[in-house]
Amino acid sequence: MGLNLYLATHLIRQLGGEVSKQENTISFTLPCNCREKKSTPSQHESTHKNQYENMRILIADDNTTCRKVLRQQCQLLGISVIEAGDGLEALAMIRNETYLNRAFDIIILDHHMPGLKGLQVAERINGDTSIDPMPAIIMLTGVSNPPSKYQSSKLGISSILTKPVTRFTVQRALIKALNKQSA
Image (cartoon, rainbow, N blue to C red):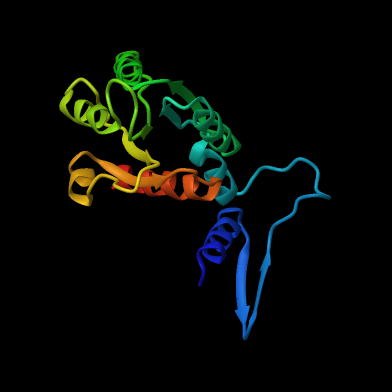
């Protein structure tokens, strides 16, 4: 099954739909409440809707356009986003929000930023005992030499995404980060 088909199937199931395959034909059904008056959502629908509803993400990237694209992709999923333009600003925001009991669930860090690089921010997050709960970390890179799997694992980086990223790539990384965080 190709990646696009996998993502489409996953999305259909997340929306409460069903996917079936017969020979070379794949079909799906999605629930539609078009004719119904206001009704209470099913448990599955409310769980999906609430999956991202209270999530808080910090996007730290020195590229304004990249932050804007990521913010829009996250907001389409209903996620609250805060942005930082560099590593020092990101670290200060993480510490401040944790102190105010509004800790970030996920931090999306650019690998190469002026001042503190993404890996340096991840190291400081992991070394700071006042940051609790520990946020999941997603690393963005535009280079061909991303951090090693060992280094990523050691720093709690759940995914490394190569720019430019699509909404589906971001969503898949968020799901992976959430699953890793709840494990």
